[in-house]
Length: 306
Image 1: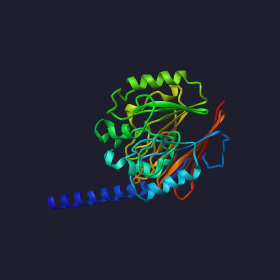
Image 2: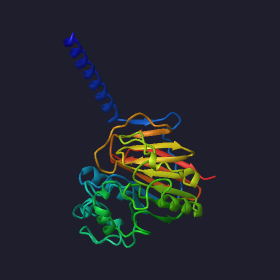
Image 3: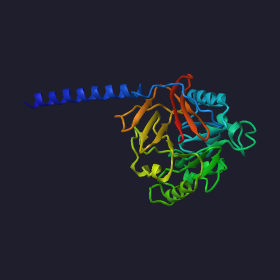
Image 4: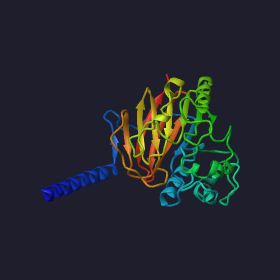
């Protein structure tokens, strides 16, 4: 009897293993667009163009290809959603991971890869790998940013950016009741920009490996945000929740993750190649594209401001 039980257990484990492998393989090769979300060539005649990269700071061909793609767009600015400096956020790696590829956007730039920009056009937020260095110090030393440099805001044309530190190490907290969240609520209430975009590392909603982050599910829509862009999961996803758009954009250069079960509101999921976002905004519209390093248009969504 024990032998049969043992054989049955082995067979069950093999079946579970094959099922898990099938899920993993499926998750590794996803390009899903929900019905009614066909990629029409929508455009927006905006006056600000910016790129968004995420989870990028790991030298290799993917990072180099994405950086070349971003530079070819000649964006007005580059926004990052964190994990700028793998693996441990160290001072010894930060210039090779960032400046080598994006020095032309950074000011003041004191690294070894050129003279940098005449004015800063590179606006990061910290990720969990950046925070592996004590007190985030290499990141804070490398960049010159507004406010306390961990979270801050900036306005470019019709866009008000709110750059958050979503990490648990943030001294002002990362919950909806934190000092940082109160700052965001106040700043959003005072904003008169046509578009309010929140940028952070950990996405509140994600169908990727890490999944939802309940701590970061702040009432962004209620407070006045139009778009929330995160990373952390190394994939691309667009979700519609609470009447606004949530983006996961973590394909900037690090290894690609698989997906788990589709999240509520998920309309586009992609993890076949590395890439970046190109966003064009005017007072009445904003167009969001994700383009992979093969220059394939993966997502193209335009929002209109009533």
